[in-house]
Length: 177
Image 1 (spheres, helix red, strand yellow):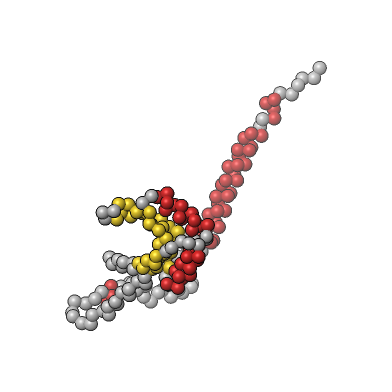
Image 2 (tube, rainbow, N blue to C red):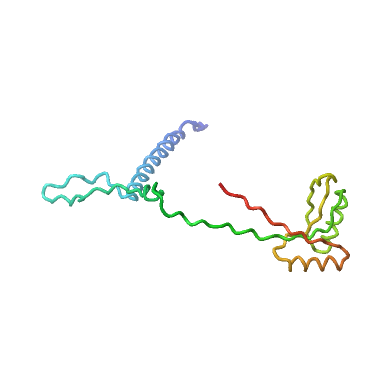
């Protein structure tokens, strides 16, 4: 009867795989360094000293000049002189709104807003405190930059029995620091 082969006889390939991986890593690292040096133009094997028979390459005549800063030319001087031209701020253009109603109940304001939405008009509800009267919910349409635009929407709302009031609002200008 023949003896079965032992399992240990085919195991010598395990160390050869590890050796192959290590050789591959070393070759890859050497190639990566070579490509990096070639791409940057650096040559570590190039001599920096001129050969005995060859003349030295022309050295730079001057080193790079130091950067000049125009800091003091940009700043205003201490002596009195011409003042910079002042720009008068332009008054902001007024905005126009159509107020369709003002209600104490937020549900009533929401109902009017929904009614306007069915007509294709987008409205906004503004809640504000009125001195001595309490909280009111205003239903407003807009803003419009021209009265003609507001009048076009106003005629549409009047045809659908929704009375409106034209409100002119001038935005406040804020000074920037």
